[in-house]
Image (cartoon, rainbow, N blue to C red; front, side, top):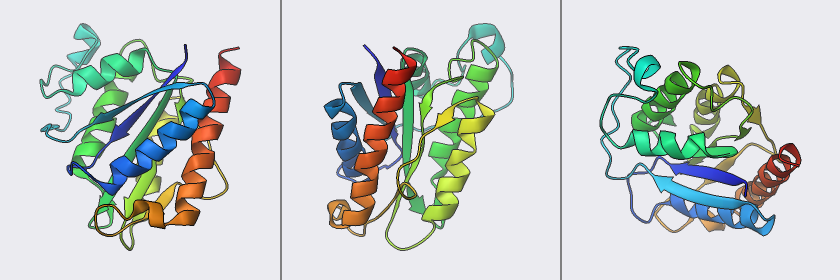
Length: 189
């Protein structure tokens, strides 16, 4: 069965970012594609140290839990990372995770090549566009297929539990989820 991994970059347990990913996953699953949401919450994700050991070991040598994500991505057909916006950009641990995932893929079996997906940015007021652009750069450099919807994958949300109040943003995330599922299915026919 085809599968999409969704990665939450929020450190909060009941975060708006997680709510948005749960909604996205629901619409992916409605199209008959399996999903798994993984959270970076509680992990101390480190930045790449450029040691290139991943080219020998086929995984990152930094032991902080990211290797579990990498192993699951190797078996996946789609990838959707979502980050809350802090100070106008994606959280540092999310960008560190994406950079290390990309480094491992490029240095080994290129498991990301041809994978389907795109990023999601969630914020109270601003910085979503920059965050989305920052995270989107990960996709083409790894030979991935970026799927769209009818607007950018941005959701406005303030206090925890308010993400679903952005009806336009959530409608776009639902369509994005459906589109990711349909592209994944077509590529696996």
